[in-house]
Length: 164
Image (tube, rainbow, N blue to C red):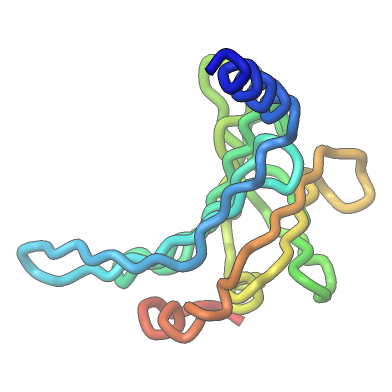
């Protein structure tokens, strides 16, 4: 019995030293009935391959498509800035984004302002890389690997109109 407890403690200590596997969720559909309509919502996310960042994708019949990034670290000053998305093997796309922070030095959330240029590519993406700043300037970066977004791509196209 004592050997078993020592072995379990050793395994727990070893597991604590290993990096955590990045969490990811492929497209999930929810319904939010209201008095006037049944709002269909879809969401997916991926944690960064390394680091604390999370990239979240949202789509619904009322508010269209949205990308929200939760850096959970300092990546940008608060305000409007440029960020660069690289999706799978496509060319990088520069977008404007708002960065927000509250009560700490960390950037709480980064919200791309016009997601049309990346929507069609990102709804079925496998790998997304993000540069938190204008192209060519030193800035924080993060990479995200999704599981199988392509499996839900047809449903996303039915639920909300997406850009190019």
